[in-house]
Length: 157
Image (cartoon, rainbow, N blue to C red):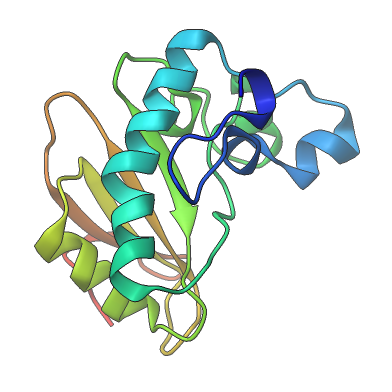
């Protein structure tokens, strides 16, 4: 199918990577361009589908594409990789039910080709989430973020 209902991979659709409660609540448009759709397809293929295949547990990303206006509305930056402003660049936030986010972040870091991997707001078990981005020239950057300490290098639990 084409447009918003387009399947990006076997288990992920464009609708899942563009859905935003904040956008819906505030009436903010969150429709990617064709080029941005290509980047979202890449992140579904390179990150989401391999995670789904490995764990064999259905999950829905909590945040994928964000228009610049939506990024600002959620307290992020219009320069965020969630905006897919650069060809081949995209970001997604996700969790897998029943899997520790630390374990998930470690598996992604050891098995997938990513640009940036951030373990966000993790305090143990299923807290927080994993942010992962792709880029044409991946940095393989590992970070941990929490409000008390900000961004730190590596995956810190």
